[in-house]
Length: 195
Image (cartoon, rainbow, N blue to C red; front, side, top):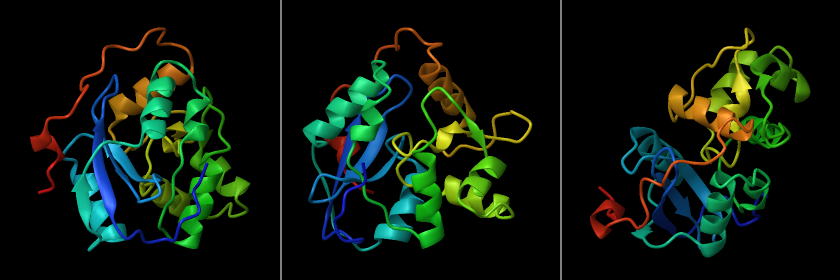
């Protein structure tokens, strides 16, 4: 569920969460809404997203909001509806925000194509632009860009990597009965420092 704070937060809190496939790095605003969620503690993609949308915003290390942590754990434990309860807010163009909202309508356990998504938002000729907006999604997993595949049914680009996209789709389709142990329970302070 999107939050409704202003586009640019006054400060952000950086946290790391455990997941069965990789640590999740997230940045939340002063209201506890997720602004950026990406894989790995030192992802260059995350650095690019932060620089583009939140450059200059003060960032401090801290714990993830309890509600966000609980819903992400629930999702990885098999409650696929949990993602819909994570509060988030994004900065982007109107077109990007339209695409990101449309991603929320793709049910867990299903996929769609870029062409179908473009038609769904009333821009059938904008397939490439939809793909670019999908790739710029700052709140991975929660805004489920991993559910978009190529027209031929094949997996296409994913900021977190194709293996993770494959894992998420299998998890949502029920192909993974029990998640593997989390790779990170409590992040050491050194991992929480910004570079």
